[in-house]
Amino acid sequence: MHIDVLVEEPSTKEALQHLLPRLLPTGATARILTFQGKHDLLSKLPGRMRAYAHCLGADDRVVVLIDEDRRDCHDLKLHLEHIAHQAGLTTASRPDEQGRFQVLNRIVVEELEAWFFGDVPAIRTAYPRVSATLAHKAKYRDPDAITGGTWENLERVLLRAGYFKGGLNKLEAARAISLHMQPAQNRSRSFQNFVLGLQRLH
Image (cartoon, rainbow, N blue to C red; front, side, top):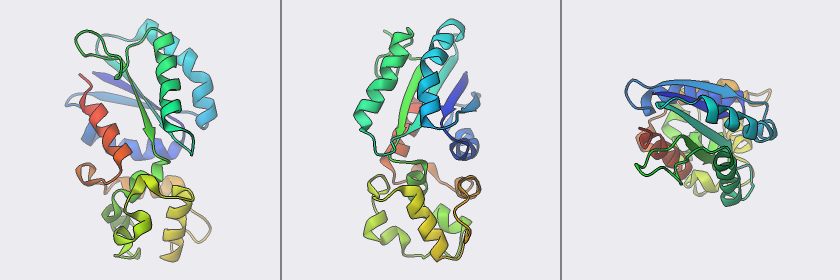
């Protein structure tokens, strides 16, 4: 099986490069394609899906992973599903008669950094000066419900611990934290939905 994963920014690609080998079915290969932000991905997605409809092999799959970014999650998911269906592709929510599908659409609630807050031990392994009580603070108990922007929150946490004094380097943080993440222990619901979707690929 080969899987193309479409993401909106380099930091997501960086994290997935470390996570996918632990999440994909045995023997599967993956290629991560990065776009220039959400608008670029969404604007090019219809054409990309039409192209996939003509070239996907029986063992090829496509995963679209996009940040919620304070948009209505349900509407965004419906939009992604509509694009795939218009191209004639089956999706996880509308598979074929055998339960097989070609496209898996998943939303990161609200941004990639929420997945990092879902695994505070990984943050602390990468950045040991981060407070040991971080995971117990009410603001961070539900990673998908963090207000004020998850990357901004991660930047503040790391700044307080003495890291990234010139501002958060999202690519560097994604690399450092994802290396230590334990998927089964992640408290982000959107991350676990992503994992479950990958497990359904067959």
